[in-house]
Image 1: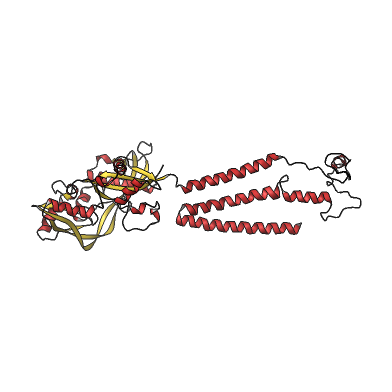
Image 2 (image 1 turned 135 degrees about the horizontal axis):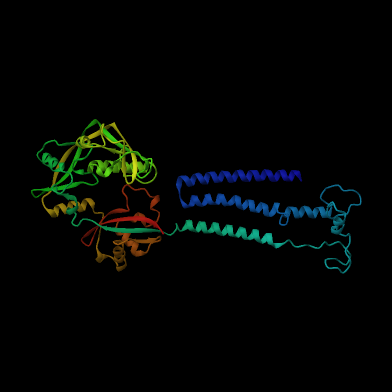
Length: 451
């Protein structure tokens, strides 16, 4: 008996070690891949020990259900369990410590003839007492419920939680010239007119840190001058090390608190200073995990004064600057430090590209339009999908209907047809772009939604 128990303990230890190893491998794979298949393996590694523990209790531990304990009891009753007993000992129940109880439960050597459960030769035939079904039914029901729960989890993983691919169309400038050709009289950057005139005359006009005209390679700007269209751009021609004040805020308390320090109200500042406080406030909020921040505007955890004129006129910079400011009913401590920056130097460029509006429109179409759709070439269902997409959007689960597949194909979004675009690699985002649909320009966006 001790040898058998030791063997069971060794097998149990090996079983637990293997389960832990599998759980570690599957857990690491899920953290690396984040797919539903690796999550299914991880859930299996959790349910497997529970199933093993239930089985061990069912067959080895419980006194009513254990087959091992029943077999041991049967051997003791039969007297062949290998244990030496005194002469004259009769097979039966062990001594219970009470003579009357032991005598009452002792199995007689022979059974009276004709009694139920006996044979005609008076051979002992102990009557089989059925085990109470309550605990067995409870364990069986628990096992069934666990399997159904696991099945439901895997079903939910299989259908991705009702994930749908949504298409949204939004209006774009029509014609494109109205959105990309700038009028220097309406721009908020008055220095752009000066930069354009200098570049057109062949003079070097440079800016530091900010690109002339606000033009970027992925978002170029254009201008019209005396009937000719020009592309506005810039090139980097140098680098400079400069020092700028950086404004940072740290939350202190609410503005109405009794211990709130004296503070200047941000609404009384100039427009430039209010912008600085607003950007620094968003940086402080993000620092405390209370909200996001526009990191293209936030620099070094605050707001950077890059314009020397704005720096000279600011109430936030200098010896007379307040130590605290009130913004959005919150008192912030003001911290302004001068820090060193290395900034590129840009030179403005202008290039003539078109002499007529039609030619300029063709250039913009070639630059920005990804797909061209015609309602006459589409089915009524496909046109209905595009009509719904111009509102709140149109969405379908995978596999998609044939009209939706047609729309996705015409938009050049073939990567979405198989439903697992996340596993693909691509240079440009296949889920965003511009389309020309029956003479009107639209921006389209594809994204997955879960209801």
